[in-house]
Image (tube, helix red, strand yellow):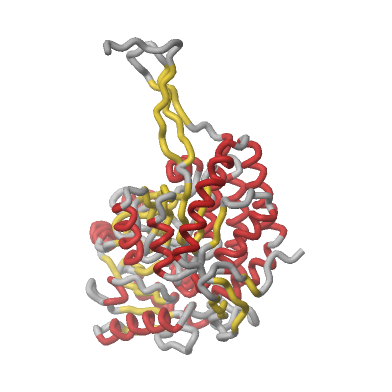
Length: 475
């Protein structure tokens, strides 16, 4: 059975062409929502949510389990869209559908998860704290991992009794929006609980400002996240922000250089570096830096680049011309500031080759800025204190990888400021059961993944007291 087709005419704001970044070919069209559509959807969602929250936990769990099964059943079809619409390689698209299924299966356990505690009290009563659904949750998701970065909020929010307004990035509105709506429709989700609202910044503002919305879950750039956070604060709404990163990979003295270079290449070049967790800074002990940078550059020169829909490639296209220009600009400015290009460094639109830079300083643009492209800047460090300083010398704090001796790595892990630390792994990693998030300019903490984080994200705490009889009062 086909889950998706090429025309997805939703919304009243006209249509938007779904474009394949590798070829420029139009794959279909999606309807564009308007702020008026958002207002109508928010009202409908609030109405539908009340009945959904009253459903038996087993009913909500059954919908989530069925959704997980559907991601598995339709994996190949959805992967085709992720490959063509997002410019992903086939293995990366497979990670997305596998994670989508896993997230839904994990979310299926949330309706029956304990959600409260008995409190001590000095009064003759029972005193309880219980978690209740937040109500309507707005989910704003980006283009790079369009399915995972939407479903990781949509699934637990629905499982916990909420309704959802979903605004995907217009560039990936099919794999990050339409596919999710279609799966939940087929899984038996009642009408009115999940609304797809592709659109521009005005639509994004509307899904934050709608009075029915209680919680906003945003994944995207730090600049856009600041605006979302400001808007949510004006309405006194909770907001979960998972933003950018400039993540460090530290290669400790004595580490296996061949394995370290393989990890570093994966961390920097997976999905063309268009990942918030991408390895953006390689810190290598001075005793091994020359060997490491040689090995990394050799790998970069060998990795095939091209259209992932028609060839076996390691890197596909950059998502659009604007992002390609940004990557090119950062590299060009870094070279002008003294960085040396050891591999890559020149665009071949819509592609950018795996690039290795050496000879950088604290102020080199490629070292300071989030590039969101396949660029690996490498620097040497002298000792663990300097490594910790370099890791922490960034506004971001999303992910850190440390390669080498575990005892030394644990010592360094205690000194770094980051939402995630991976010892003997590179910086890119996620699991349905693990809390995910960052600090500083990378966001406001670990807000997604695992039962506890999801319950805290998408429910409110309510204090409930119970007496055997009506209390007496002096009035």
